[in-house]
Length: 254
Image (cartoon, rainbow, N blue to C red; front, side, top):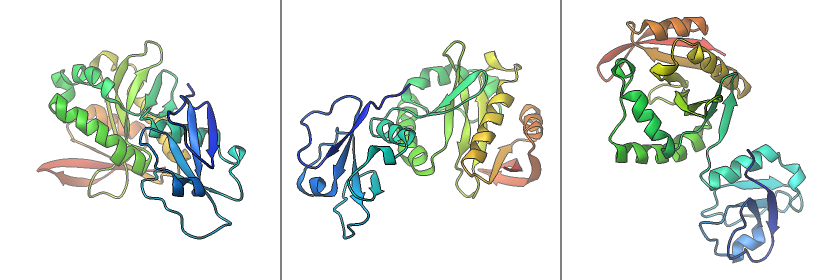
């Protein structure tokens, strides 16, 4: 689904109220004279030929081109992603045969709590926090992980039913220099090859986005995860200590 309907290049005053589906492109001159409202989805366009400094305080995205702004110069998908980010609309990441992966939102938490209520899920996976903390964490995750790294742990949705059936993606773990493949599929949807299908999709995405190496950490006793990682082509590397727990690290060169 596309949310961005049009772009509007602004050289003078901004509208009092933003029009739904419009991404406003502000010229440098307009930005110097306008007090931009925080609820207006806008980016700054900078003419790279003019040079000089431009007042950019509070500007989240800057587009650079030559001459006056030309919407055909910028990829539609890229502008769509910017519009979604400014409006806190999750990005669609990838599709597999049976699943859609998109960025996680607070609305997914009800399904997550149901999935994590199964003790078999939390046997090898850390449980969720209290609701208020989990909501705050989810909001911050968008700003501190998705926006900065361009990837993270995403929500897995069944294309057939529209249900949230798990989480999977490439996380950034402190102390490591490669992203970590993580995955949790609810018990109701296990033993159907979904985790393998989703993880293969994630690894294809990693290759397409120039991620060279991926790791995964798991307990040696978690035979289901170990077997899955081996099917995906991961190789056992070494043990690492995380909060007092000895975990096996598996590595895969993309």
